[in-house]
Image 1 (cartoon, rainbow, N blue to C red):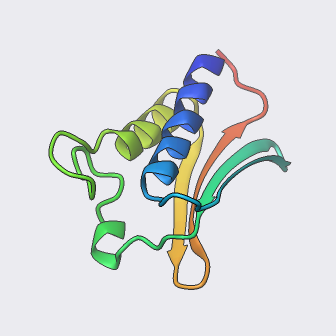
Image 2 (cartoon, helix red, strand yellow):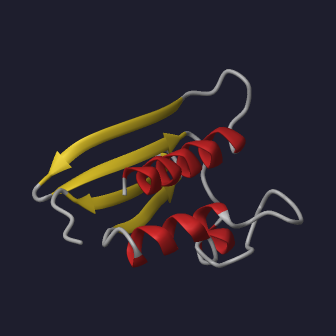
Length: 108
């Protein structure tokens, strides 16, 4: 299962970096919260409200044609195979943070 976790966190970090500009800061965080481990990735940019409504849809991208599997695959693999959950917050003055929470104990 740790291979999936690496892929999920890698996709979240890659998306944050691609949405950033040279010199921007991207923050990755990992912390236990209750019975979960929560990973988060932040950047200072805000996702447009119309894009926020579609962000987890398959093949939706703000980056051009042939893109759009990153956030979709994070949500799909996290929720279907890792028994976790994914969400985000994006607001002016706060930037955008994507979260992925996974149970600390995964049963087979």
